Image (cartoon, rainbow, N blue to C red; front, side, top):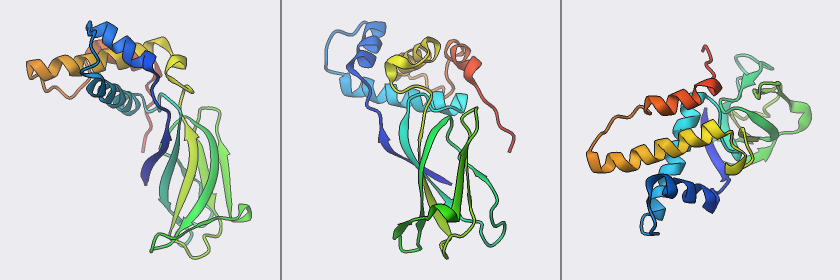
Length: 187
């Protein structure tokens, strides 16, 4: 499975303002760096919790499995899925075609798990599933603890560039804020 964010939701100016306030920065000189740190912290939050914090329009590429397990349900790796929009076949040369609704099925569970199955892939070996996933529609709608964890992690990375602290794991104060949302899956 390969995921791509087709249309990320841009962070509002208030997100950058909160981080700058946390760090005590009054200039615009580092705005690009700070915005990149916020995006990285959101990605780390998703990796830690197993949940995409802010909604985005995504695509995952999957094998069809019609030869080995026809009609078997496959689970999208990104959560929580808000809506599955479409499924396209992907030919070896990259040409895409919308899969007819009678050739596939899609469903959402209450916990945000998105599933799909392919009954007839029309000869294609891969499909592209398009969907919207995320806990909140935007930065300001994020739960306070998640937002504070993202801000603290971005601030931690900003400070670490000067101290040389290359610890990749989020600080315990951040993981404590994110822990109630953490979802583990057995594979």
